[in-house]
Image (cartoon, rainbow over all chains, first blue to last red; front, side, top):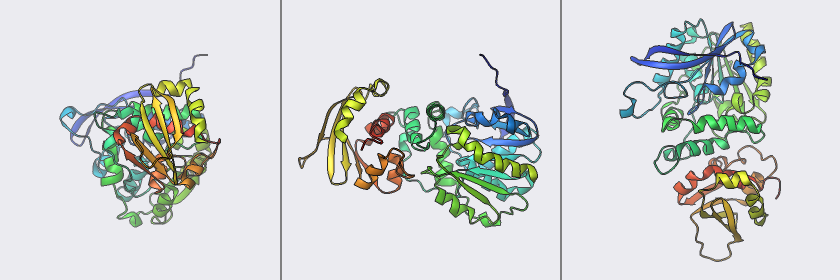
Amino acid sequence: MAQIEPITGRYLRLEIHGRPHRLYFEEAGQGIPLLCLHTAGSDGRQYRALLNDANITANFRVIAFDMPWHGKSSPPEGFQDEEYQLTTDRYVEMILAVSDALELDQPVPIGCSIGGRVVLELAKRRPDRFRCVIGLQSSAFVQRYFPLDGLHKPNVHGGEFCAAYCWGLVGPGAPVEHRWETLWHYMQGGPGVFKGDLHFYSLDGDVSEGLREIDTAACPVFMLTGEYDHSCTPQASRDTAVMIEGAELTIMDGLGHFPMSEDPERFRDYLLPVLDKVRAL
Amino acid sequence: MIDALPELINANAGLVRRGRWASFTMLLGIGETSWLVTIDQGRIIDCRPEDLCVSTCDFAILGTEDAWQKFWQAMPPPMHHDLHALIRAGKMRLEGDIDLLLGNMLYVKILLEQLRGRI
């Protein structure tokens, strides 16, 4: 039987980095704003299960936006003459701009991978702006261990290779349908966009400095990391968590780099207890 | 064993379709032993141990015996479940025409996983 999901998708016009942008975002639910940040090279569809979960949307306004250049969000005018490269400053500024534009009051950013990284920077720079942060596959830095060139070169199909790279970032026990849905998002990415995001992930975005200054009394930090992630490994998350006094880290059995997308059911068991704590803050 | 690959792959219509542009010879280095696997439009047309001192292949995937053994477990342990994971763990390396491999990486990864739980 046909069914319309309880998700609303809209376009947002706003300025980011002083330039007009047209951003696509989806939302569902009411309550505490849960601002979802997708992984490098993907888009907000990774959070489809959270947006459809009545147990979550009963208490949270779940919002997932596609970053500029990703999903249904356009790159800014003039993009054809630029190389896309995400930096720490630009990423933080973008999230604050979206939060302001949507008039979110004390939102909870939940980010995965690059998103899991940047939420630490948000907690560090602007603890006043957020109720708390949730980092999935979150670590202060990941050293590059494979050349990024293959992600964007004319003789290698970018979509095919981006999916191939992410194939093993998904846990081996992930349901087949969710594995391929997750990979499909990567197959659809624009040329060089995944690579441009990884500029932040493995070159520019080392957020180690100042992590110890994060005041988790002002902005609590929750971290969830899948055991099969060979990029942001459990050890990388542990090494990061010990630098943040009061951070709560849980290692998730069986899950890989895209927990909310690759295996939503298994991830839910780990997320709901965290969301209960968020509500109690 | 590795010699089960042709039957497994060639009977997998979805994988053969995925590999319809895949035509190359890859060398699988498993510790001290090597296998040459020749693929033509997604089908394996030759698969044999490499017992000569000189190999001709387009690219090579070289791993320790322990790495492959764990990779081929029905449910491999973390850091042993993927070529890139094994590369990061320092237990695998790639040589040869890397662009050719990158362009066919999804096909190759799925092909190699077909031996999971069978070795």
